[in-house]
Length: 316
Image (cartoon, rainbow, N blue to C red; front, side, top):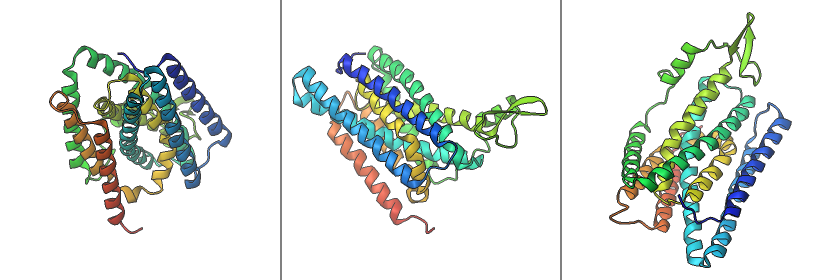
């Protein structure tokens, strides 16, 4: 698994992610258990998106310096941007599932941000491992691309079929298993995952929530990681675009939470994107769709879906 990125840029990326998580945790600790306002969510979302673009500019200069070619730098930075946009788009569907989980367990708004923060750290670790494994598989077995492509097409078709249905956690097998294995308190105990009742240490509903959030991360990583391998095989671009999309997940959650009803048709757009990306992967040895075209298609699908959603949004 070779990458065009120089070693120093890998180090800068790791240091940046560690610093960003540290700052986020410090801010989270100082704020304590309190609800995140829409204004705060917008500000933090803009910060994370801005930092992603700053990193992409740094990436462009690093590739330009390493290769001496502006054309290669343009191509690689465009791959990062396309991958980032795809991962950010798919994260929206992830957020809707988080909303379902929080609503089902009636998680107080003040406790939600800690769960999301832990989920983000878990997602970064999980995706790093999956990206390295996926990159190795593709480098050793080219046919894996066809497996990924077929999987994305089937996932997109399944998402389209399920988009109009009312989601529910009642029949979730993971939730049923957790309830059988662990005794769970009926009430929350602040932000604690464990509490003591009748002299016994048992899980709180918040622990159940963090387990389901972790499971959701696994499921969506299986979808999103193959999608970005259709754009680029460079492990650095795959990893960085994934991580930067995830870093802004907490702020984006609270932003979309306030406007969830206005994006009620977005899953249809995400389904089309998955089918397109899967088809692109299946056709890779027949016809290679340029990255700029992929970016344009993804942007167009998102724009059409969001406009369509806003025009047909239910009155509130």
